[in-house]
Image 1 (cartoon, helix red, strand yellow):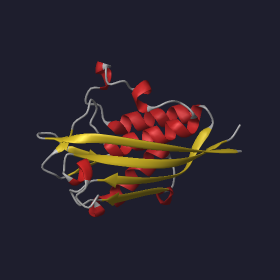
Image 2 (cartoon, rainbow, N blue to C red):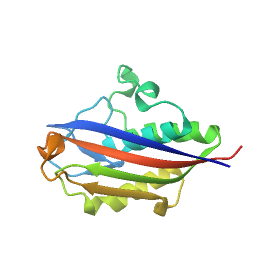
Image 3 (spheres, helix red, strand yellow):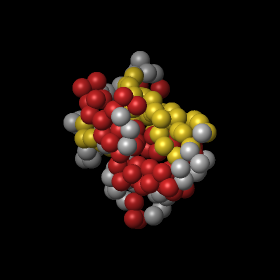
Image 4 (cartoon, helix red, strand yellow):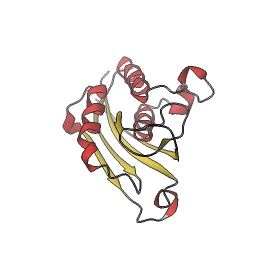
Length: 160
């Protein structure tokens, strides 16, 4: 058995007129995030952590923003595709630890649903996915409400 760790980071700016998708769920808010897909910054960070742990590159190489096929796509579809790739190569997720970094909205009420949604796609127990949120105490681009960042760490296990 081989264990590998991957980490992911993603950032998207706020935009008017778009729903806010985080962790595979809709979070009620007056703005959404700008991106080629649905701009789910949390799922994108998790995707990069998974791909990094398995040594399979990053989200931009696998799902380029120059490909019209991915315009507006639900990031849960992208995460499921990554999981199929990992499973086919003998990888399984041990756990995910992820943090959303934003000044607003308050995410505590939505984190259990995010973790549950992510766990289902990853085919792991819900306690294997930890989702947290933090502010930057009004410092930096997230503190100025210019955008949202997310980071994730994934532990993968490979069985030959």
